[in-house]
Length: 94
Image (cartoon, rainbow, N blue to C red):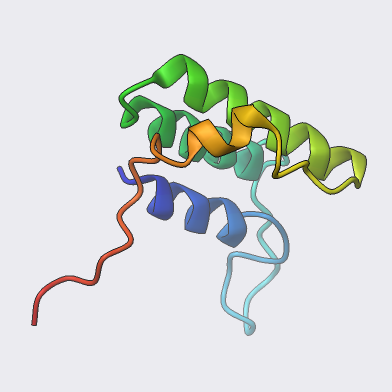
């Protein structure tokens, strides 16, 4: 499963009812969104030529996000990381 799909599933399961509005609310287990988000990070890192560096960058950016600080995008670890991403940015043909 792609990192993008795992990230979308994390958002979907992050809150609110999974059931249609006319039915009783059905909540996902609390850990579901976190597991999908972690899977997205690990999946993206696994597609990287340098998995260790990819995870290091992901953890540093996640730590900055969780602490409410801006990541230092000028640090060498970030600029070296630009080549590691396995995420596709091009549009499909057609």
